[in-house]
Length: 433
Image (cartoon, rainbow, N blue to C red; front, side, top):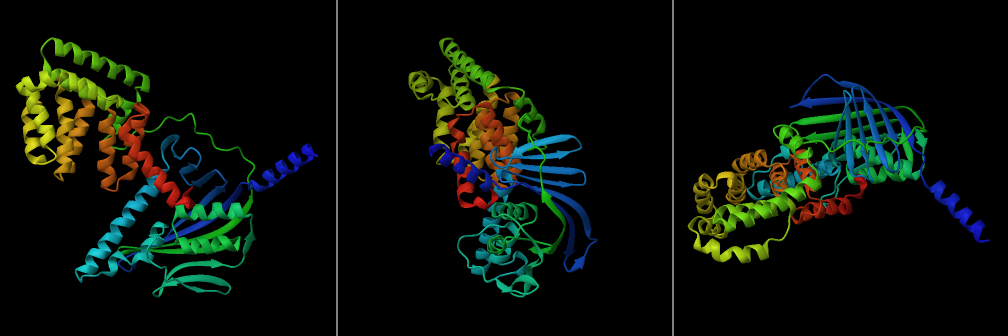
């Protein structure tokens, strides 16, 4: 009896695992700018819908989203870019918040504009719910199910189509999210139909552009091919202007970084015994920035020497006073950097932090890059550099920087908040996973 129950359970689990489905689509993308149409873009797109991955192949390019690995692989001209899956959703969330914030600011000032669109149009564009506004969608059913908002057509789905498994339908909706978008309420409605529509239309209103996707289903069939495997592909460096720095960092390993940090700690002790207090402090800080190790006890032992040394004392005063007056602290560090010799790049990192506090991210970005030219193993600089790009909505570069940081020092405490951000994205927007 027990064996029979186990067999039945295994059969149920096998049935519950949705069969991968291959779709052959004709996609027509139409764009109008300020009301003037541009030539339509016609493409033949092949899509593989699977429970644990999504594959989208277009002429000249293939994209595979690997959901368990949280990686996105872009294959173009035999080159494979291995980037974080979170970068796409991270941009949507950041940009949606930006636009909703601008909407509120303009509303408060009495200068509302249709150019930004309202909350529903923004949700539709980025395919995520702002968790506050009601949708306000108007649904019309017939041979075609349509959705409008304030007279604007958002979506149309033909009722003709093919019934598919619930998990396959979930995967199709996930494809639409990544490929073009769609309001969460519309996509949730579509998922309940369980029908793969012969004709799908989604229109998006993005500032002065209207972008319309017309998707025609040519064929659908079970996909029996092997699961794409890119586990052998190393993570890719950020795009320019950080590509060369990223390549240098990825030539290292976590073991070499740990050893470099240990060497820096030894050099710090040696410099201290030789009376080079500033050099000892900077080497200790560099070790901490590389591997994230706690230096509290080391600093406590060095404190009397640092307080007695004018240069080291000036460094600590600039860092401690930077919270209250980052402009003055940064100016003091400019002078310190000129005296720091081989530790100048560590001072540059501290300067960059104070520049960020002074709302000068471009100058800070350049200083972090300069520091990484001197030592590409500084995990903390990669983390802060990623923060700058994330704040500028360049999430692809941001996650590439953070990925390098985790590659160099997987347990570095500065990277904990990146993990928290990713957990937030997974838990609040499960439709992308």
